[in-house]
Length: 180
Image 1 (cartoon, rainbow, N blue to C red):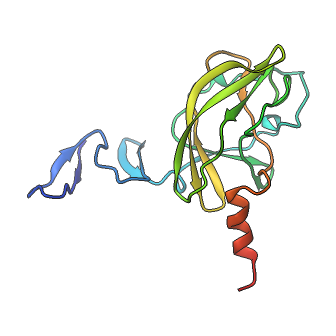
Image 2: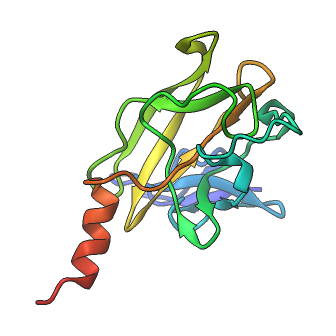
């Protein structure tokens, strides 16, 4: 399968099989064998598990995100509300697991900006005992999407919480509701 793309200053269209031709802000995504360059803000998988909440403390079932085949971009929800990964340490035994994962750094501020962040897992009194693979985060209009990676070991789960105060996403939502 080939994707044909226009490359400036080249008088013909060249076959492009690995999505090297995707425009900035788009991602090469294969759906049902069709390769396309799509915006992750419009093409993501929803994660809406109550046990991913930073407030969830039930230890009956210990979750493990290492058992998931991570592919593409994800958006977090808790119920009907869009949420985001915490930027601060999450206490042990939260989010349905032993060592909850949080991002060590800030979310992107500019619309369509993508940042790469380290992910930490709190364990044995250390906020960053487990340093998992880096993830990417994109700021969309009113929410974030995450390109999650396989955690470094089991009993690690990507956590989510309420949108943090003064975040760029809240500013987007406030502007939508502000009188002109």
